[in-house]
Length: 87
Image 1 (cartoon, rainbow, N blue to C red):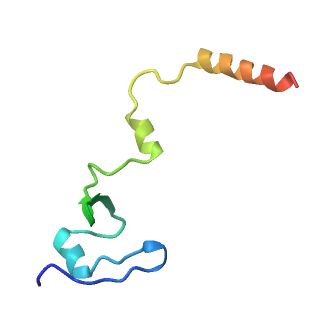
Image 2 (cartoon, rainbow, N blue to C red):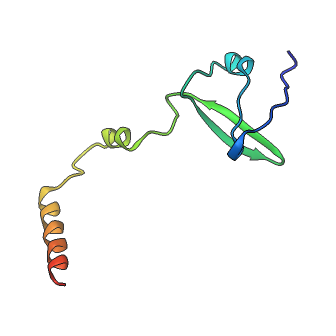
C-alpha cells in the first residue's frame, strides 16, 4: 500500500479513517485524535490514553489538597440566599 487514499466526507465534515490506516496505527473504537492545520494540510495524530483530555470527573480526582472549605461554602451560601431574598 502506498499510504494514500481518497475519501469523501459525510454531512458536517465527518470522515471515515480507512481500516488499513486504523490497523497500522493501532486505532481502536472510542479513540481520540489531535488535529491541526499545517499550511493547507490537515494533520491528525492518534492520542494515547495517557495524553488524552480528561473529563471533569477525572480532573477532580487529580486535585490534591484542601479544595473544599465548609466555612467558605456556608458563607457563600448565606450571601447568595441574602441576594435572592432581597428582591
